[in-house]
Image (cartoon, rainbow, N blue to C red; front, side, top):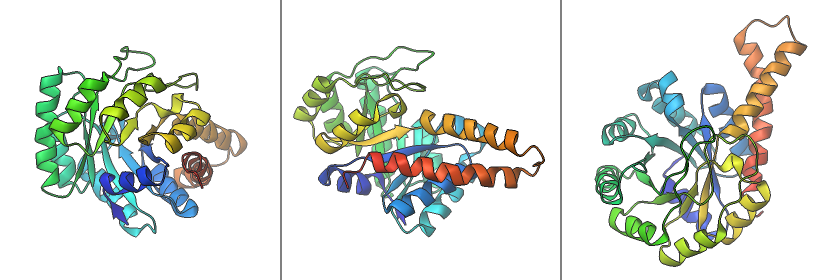
Length: 275
């Protein structure tokens, strides 16, 4: 069933758990993630980020993801990740996405508030949820992070009326190890000042132990998981090709990888639930 980000995060917050925002690159992983969610009887967020959109247009991604969501037996959010402009967010809404993230994290606070608020006004007309970002979550092999200021986060949440707020509290995008430790003092201070559900980008770099504990004890209601599953996909694809060199049909090759992706995604989903 198609769901909005607001709906699944509200339930997660009151259930002391978090929802996985799984970064998608194609049909096989989208389908694997929905199947995993159905087996675990948990909601899932299918995310189309910039690299996915460079490969496949929003006008194609929206119907693909929405088809899977509408056929699913559990809540599935169809989410635009890192929308870089109001226009991209508008295109995602037109393409059937049920949630959009506007990323104004590189802007000054006033500009970030103004533009994010414009996206909220647009999206909320159609019942579409909006995630915003305050502070800047850096990249493992690129830009450095800028820690979220709790007072600015509270102002940002109040003035934009966002449904979820991505914060920078030690997390880093595209990290292949799990050596990141989130700053729990900053997290506690943020949630003292605002009750907006919090989002951790770069969740793959955070240990499962800390992810699970904060899912159960804080306002962190969504972890974005991309690199963890992408590296698994790559290693499993190589194994299939080595062990079955006679295969040449991409559908047969990817069928084998997809079944393994279901199990990997189930493990991620379970790790954020307190059941």
